[in-house]
Length: 154
Length: 304
Image (cartoon, rainbow over all chains, first blue to last red; front, top):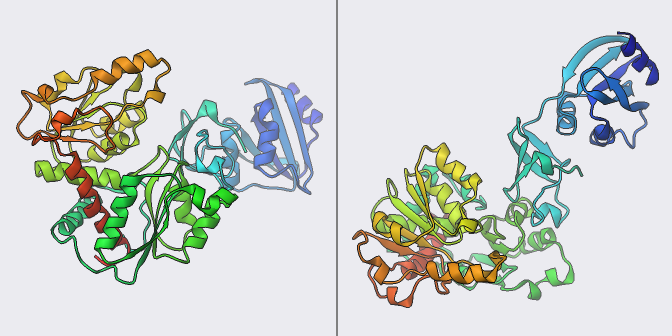
């Protein structure tokens, strides 16, 4: 409990907004990209390589005065499968949600197939998630599978 | 299924009933190939890479139905050579034609074209991805020769790893209780993603490296070309090439109803002494391409 308090101090507490916890440190920037937090007017605080009981090291993002809908939340599951989203109002936790792998993924992942049209023309990528456990994405265009280990974010 | 104004992109978009419906319509055109139902219609054939057989067969289908054809046979003579995007070419040609038939080397190009075009697209091959009209004409031919598509023993021979025709056929035939006999060199076996379709339909498949042992067992032998560039070792290619040549002598002991198919062009995988044999069916198969394409064009334009 004590270390929890410490962490809150390292990345300061927010009165209202969303805390995205349990992000792999290397994926923090990626999650910020997916949620359009790079070019935003919102106040965003983030930390990497923070101590985590569960994962050893972790990343965290706090966004002031912003609440995400489920579709946005699920998009980050590809980059941070164990992410927890905590909604805060008046410094109180009002809900905790787990990011879930969505059924369809659009515009955030590159198709692994170099011969796919999405790698040749300005075409927004579209995938059907055919395996959520092992993360396998079926390209809507070239019908090839992009596997978990080959996922590259745009 | 109502195909009017719908694009034809992938064989995976069709279920069993829809496949059979197209084959039935193709049978109608086989019996009535010359009809002027396309009078006043313009079909564009955009071939961003050359394919004589597919293009001529589409153009023949349109011409026999009284329609007109515009288009190009090589990307070098289109605006692509000036750097125009596929999307722009397709949007422009949509203004000039009622239907676009497209072959393109990039995978997924047909699906993308169908999303930007204001007229339906027929995919005549998008790289190594899909060639649905070839698959449909193969199914049509198999049914024509055997009277049914159900419960057949079908051998696929040659490059099963990269051959898109084989992949599409295996997926489509998995709707019809087929037993698959897969003959290929070790390095060109059917990918596991395609075998999954066989397994998920609770069907059987057997894998072989020798062509001879499969011949007496099957109703259809579907031969494909093995390309030299698939082999890292040219000596290995030379060894494999000769062991996958079907000769008339090898056909002794086959079933009486056996028919030999090949998507063509053939290089040396079927010896020319097979051509006159009643079991050789590959040239008739090419003719069937016209009927199947007539059926597809007519139903997409809402004329059948």
